[in-house]
Length: 262
Image 1 (spheres, rainbow, N blue to C red):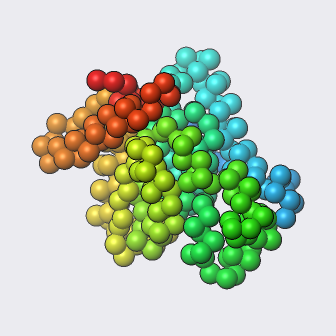
Image 2: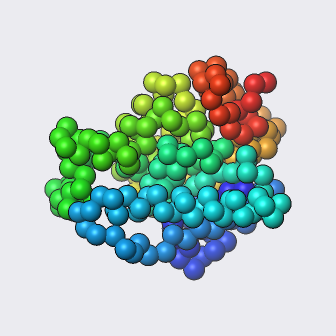
Image 3: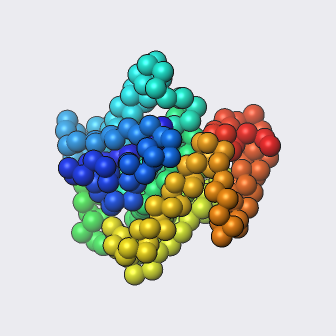
């Protein structure tokens, strides 16, 4: 099963926000799809970190409950569940793969919510994050709070293969996470799209992302490689990621068909 996240925006089959995770295409390739709209965020208090952390944690709890129910109904294989997200959806994905062992593969469309963002954002956004989420400079008292949120600071707990399709306007936000995962020999691949903003608009880029997203999930969850000879280098990279993951993480969760020794 593949989970799509954040906002449906009335465009169910296109997965709403960002239009990078088309539900009908995933379904046509043998996946069940859970379209998880997180809704409005309530019952939080600005400056109260213990309620604000639910901004990330609550959607993951809801998704886990749905996975459990669908598994009990015999609809999905719990060991082969993937997750996707753009914008706040990407934040949910990164929190989920670094704080749970629910997902066998993941794709995000950035940016990641890590301490590096403190140094990349405009003053107005930095002030908002400080007052709303109690996340100030990671060099100070906020270090412990960042530790509870950031995927990069919990990279050692990430075992989910992660694909990132980033706009060149935002990819720097992902670099702390990407670097941390690479240093730990975790399976991660980053693509950067030129002349794109938060939501990618160039048709060529959209089409490439559609294809790669399907290939990524079919590879990790279905052990399927497209015989198209032009994709040979892609699969060589992914097989290397798989081998490295297994070799570097003995005794740890091996997610997806691809993650098993072969």
